[in-house]
Image (cartoon, rainbow, N blue to C red; front, side, top):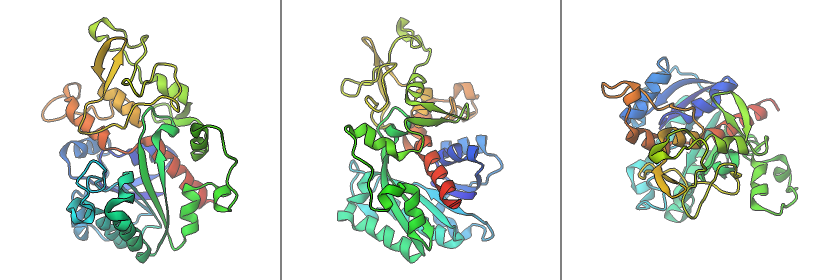
Length: 336
């Protein structure tokens, strides 16, 4: 599968899809640090920069899928809720213009749940209407990263479109039982219900080992040896806040850290000491390999890469295991 990515950030889709053999054709990212991360990891993939200049991009690019998470500020509950009146919100329509230019068979679009209620739902409705006018059948669903093996609550809306047929798009995001009108038997706990979202219940893909790991194994990767203040973080439990605690050995589905936010520095408490989450731990919470964002930056070696842009990059990113699941579902539907 050859795909293009817009609003690429540091490329969660490529980290998720490279192990299943998918190939990026081009990226589109304007921010300097994420662009440097892309250049560092994918020097042979062109970055076309500002997506509003899509008319100037080469016409002969053959892609089967377009993926992107257009800026969410317009649709975030915490934002001004200007919706399509905000130029950043209009980028969701630019996303469709890119799709119309290259005519990929599939599209995958991601945003915050606030997009569903922005302008009383009319903004999202305009997006879906325009998607249909481009010839795509579509389905959408809210997925939460905590049920895919990472230790954070991160609910996001995912729209999958397939050129000419809504049924294939729906088959990616929904199980066969729900499509046929026969819902799966109800479970006693919310966590068990959510686990039907993945074909590998309670597991997540580890990009480093190229293996699926259990919730238990993924939680334990949060700990690292930092020894600040005399505390050995390899052996002492980490606790994420007073309301959402996560100690070493707990289940992800029961205790998770809140959503990573680019505007805030996440903190953890070990015993009575409070410290920041490290950039590596933020990468792990999003499913990235350790030090994925530790790159040479502004004439400094990778070892001296500042934490600030790394935190922001992770706060803006998609969760890798969720994207991996979507990619695998698309692969499965393509074989049917």
